[in-house]
Image (cartoon, rainbow, N blue to C red):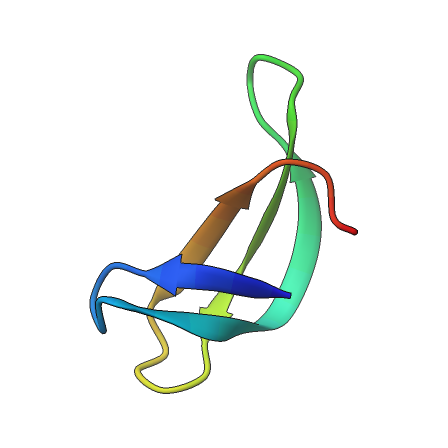
Length: 47
């Protein structure tokens, strides 16, 4: 799954992706950037 890394300013593959639920109940995916290691977050159900 890909996401947008705010540090690299590019779309990158999300490493160590895990499904989480936000406070409002919506699904999301959280993981790390493969290049810089910063946290990436993608809102919505994983496909």
